[in-house]
Each structure stands twice: as structure tokens, then as C-alpha cells.
Length: 52
Image (cartoon, rainbow, N blue to C red; front, side):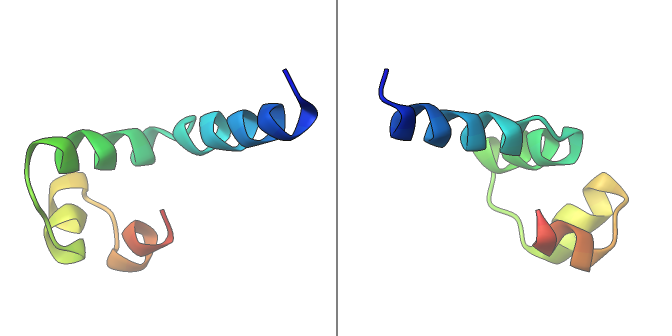
């Protein structure tokens, strides 16, 4: 595997290594939600959701 491809894969999996991000992806895979709705569902603040 080329180093460039390896670096892209590493960045991708590091992004998914966060619990909140996985929860957000799971929710968005089944329904559309606004930042406000995600914040309520995950009990996080809106800026935190936007950051992820």
C-alpha cells in the first residue's frame, strides 16, 4: 500500500475512533437530524456536535 493511501486510511479510522462521532453517524444513517436535534439526542452541546 502506498504511503499516501495509508495516511488517508489512518485519518479516516482516527476520525471514527471517537464515541460521539460513531453515535452521530449511527443516528444520521437512519434519519436526518439538525445539530439541535443531535445535541438533544446525545446530551451534548450544539458546538460540540458541530465540531464533530
